[in-house]
Amino acid sequence: MNRINQKLKEDKKLLSIYFSAGYPNLNDTVSIIENLEKNGVDMIEIGLPFSDPLADGPTIQASSTEALKNGMTTEVLFNQLKDIRKTVTIPLIIMGYFNPMLQYGVEAFCEKCQQTGIDGLIIPDLPVDVYNERYKATFEKYGLINVFLITPQTSIERINFIDSISNGFIYMVSSASVTGSSSGFGDEQTNYFKRIKNMKLKNPQIVGFGINSNETFNQATLSAKGAIIGSAFIKHLSKKGVNTIHEFVSGILR
Image 1 (cartoon, helix red, strand yellow):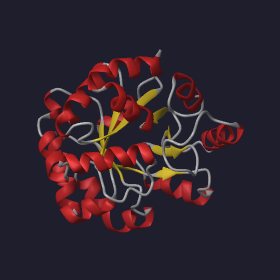
Image 2 (cartoon, rainbow, N blue to C red):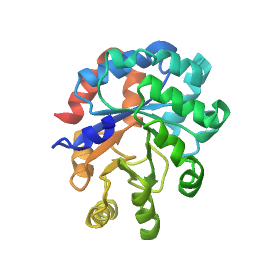
Image 3 (cartoon, rainbow, N blue to C red):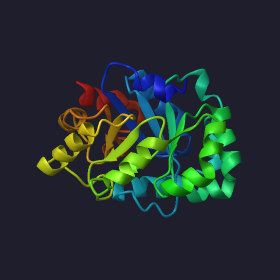
Image 4 (tube, one colour):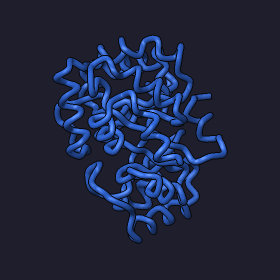
């Protein structure tokens, strides 16, 4: 069974952390992953930096730009992660845009993910229909779960279609804005979380965008299986560095 599916079966609310590979420094990637697992994080999304990150807010864009300047590439990332499964057991997901994967070769990229021990991919700009028609078989061949995003604007028909072709979790974007731009959840978002929960989808939902504290983590996970934190974690890395990851995680899970 895929590590993501195993983790989703655990009787707890899951904390997933996103960071940009190669940031703050090129060779921090493995150290960050190991530290996050050691401090109780359940899943990690490794951002593959891209020069035109449409869905990302300013914090993640800046870290992605810095990582590219540091020399991060798809090949460098795979080299960094080649022995990651000797020390890390939790699910690892690569989140990135489709262009670098296309340039690498989709099948070659998926095969490399399998060899490295990557469990899934999140590709915000790969349309669901295109994935289903052209790439689903390849992802499944290499044991990769593809995670789709839904927003408050996604139609019921679309959500049901995404649920039908998914086999992991659904990334529930808390608002229609870019990442890192929210502070707390209002009634509109809370009602949206409840609405999706009441749809009784076969795939659990994990909330992303706007989670930056113990309070917002608890709010998001009232109606969902877990929550994803990206911008707030990257801000912490920027200010305090890799050696203080325990401070950040304990502040969320306290």
